[in-house]
Length: 154
View 1 (tube, helix red, strand yellow):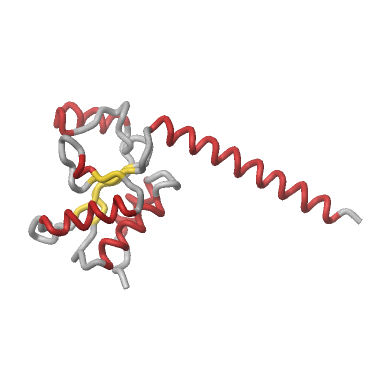
View 2: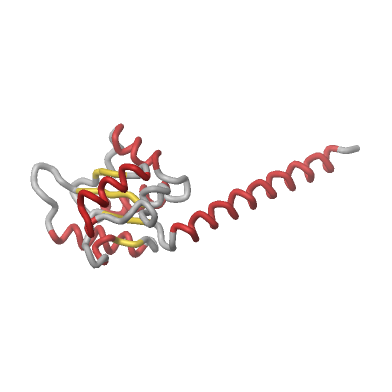
């Protein structure tokens, strides 16, 4: 059984786009089940302003607000620190489990970001997918309502 989420973990996961939330939780659960001692969410969705600040502060180490998936809630950062930095073995597990779930692991980036995980595809594709999904759900609900109304007629 995996340990419960802390209040901070819950807030960070809630900050993610609803499409990303189950993937973040599945990734955490998979890593913990494989023996990773801890899994703490450290960042979720970020504002354009904060991402721009990180870009200026870290330079090549942070994506601009125009491309970061944190800005649209499609990326999160996590760590396993418990008084000492995570062992390199656990970073491998962390990355392998992200990729097994079809996610993108920051450990493969040119500027390695070992604790970073994001949804696949570009921001534009993800935003289009979200729009299509919302439209499809609206049509499905409308169709279901129409079918129910028709079925209720004598």
